[in-house]
Image (tube, rainbow, N blue to C red; front, side, top):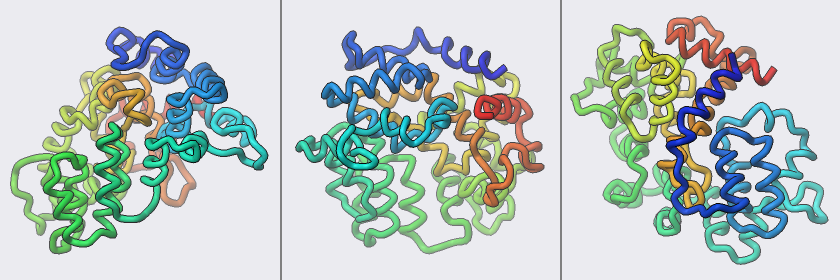
Length: 339
């Protein structure tokens, strides 16, 4: 069953994927294999290209190492030495330098900026620079840092900026306005649909809890009046396109409930919006979102999600049983590949 799901996810868009800026090359072949979900072939190819000096392969490997939210069974099976061989430069140090660090020290501006974006320092100029360099998705963490630690003026500047990541506007709004209970989830609910939200309503607060933190922290009842709005957003938003594709392909008769299940299992609104290309200058975001890799990331994130106590799989808890049966079966089948 696991293999059949993988094949379906892969075949469905092999024809649709059209690289925007990659010519026929070894890098292009490696990237295509990676987008199809084939780490076992793609990662060694990228590692070889990186060792030979291919800058794009180096930057892509560095970003995959740090930002892959749905590591494959192949990646999970690697020991530390095997992983370093794939992702690090061979040098005198015990662990090797990441390829991002290698390129940054060589003067590569993009590598330097991507490394800087990991620092918890509010910096509006950094966000503007990442956008100018073509790495819009990489502004996620710097934007959150400005929202958390920046002053009111910095947050206002971002709110007014057309280039700010639209899906993070609720986070900025939540931290810029008068605090309210479950304010992060309420801000997300207001963002994804146009109707007024009564912050004193138990049903609105229940949906806000789910949007803020996922399964176990809110209302997953089909009778919640906000559920259809949330499902509609999941099935139509650009950011959640891989979820909608996965659910339409695998759970056609139950697709909206399937999408809601992945929202719950992944950890809520602020998690499901982060299905991103690791390096947009090599793999444009729209191409990534339409790939088998993006759908596998959705599936694997849910398959690897544990309860907060880390003692059981989240999809096997009693609350999960009240979600989409089709989605839970997909998740449980995928987890068999990790056993």
